[in-house]
Amino acid sequence: MPRKLVIEGLDQDYTWEGGKLSVLRNINIEVSRGEFVCIIGPSGCGKSTLFNILAGLEEPLRGKIILSGMEITGKRGYIAYMPQRDLLFPWRTLIENVILGAEVSGNNIEKTRQEAVKLLPLFGLDGFEKARPSELSGGMRQRAALLRTVLTHREIMALDEPFGALDALTRNQMQEWILKIWSRLELTILFVTHDIEEALLLADKIYILSSRPGKIQERVEVKLQRPRQEVNPDFIEMKAHLLDILGN
Ligand SMILES: Nc1ncnc2c1ncn2[C@@H]1O[C@H](COP(=O)(O)OP(=O)(O)O)[C@@H](O)[C@H]1O
Ligand SMILES: [Mg+2]
Image 1: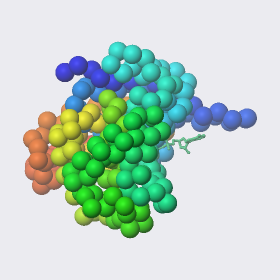
Image 2 (image 1 turned 120 degrees about the horizontal axis):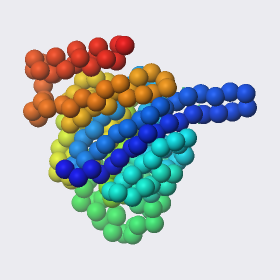
Image 3 (image 1 turned 30 degrees about the horizontal axis):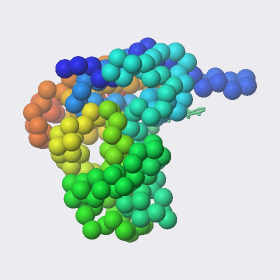
């Protein structure tokens, strides 16, 4: 598989007068086309910082981001980013919200709207075009935010804990659903979570970060067959292994 995204030797610090916080150290990550890659690590270890750098919202202290052979470090507009707190605008209808990303990127709005309408059933949002975010369930709001991210048509989607705030049942449904759209739409996904089971259910490959400053402790290939079951003995064994690494 061709390597789509390469993150090379990334370091990040936050500095201010009289102080410094080391946040990321020597982060090396590779994502191939069509892969589902999870990044897992304790709260505050720099996961969102890493995504802000990927999206070009922050410059790293050191290191490079290379997309399809081209360096994009510090550049915006290459990675489709769904931030941890990706809020839909309450005064916009669902359809106006989902075309927003394309609108900001300067894409053709009418074309994007038509495409959005076509994708609504796959995103479980059919019939809710004119609904305001307050009328939608938590799961629906996250699917709308994901549709907005998909409609920007970037080569890679970076999703920062997209299901983190959902209840357990909705979360399980969303995990099944995201695997469906990942294969249907042939997406390449980089996904942050702090939930080991979620990473094992979704990922082809998991990068485990240490607590701050975040370093890669281990890269785990997940060869389990899909659809995956939490009760499968191989699943349980991998989960124990990941817990062990994260506990150190
Ligand atoms: N702009 C900033 N300035 C200073 N410190 C920051 C900034 N953004 C994040 N931090 C700090 O950097 C660390 C990593 O944050 P973050 O990347 O949000 O962690 P995670 O997403 O893994 O929970 C935290 O200690 C956070 O308080
Ligand atoms: Mg975060």
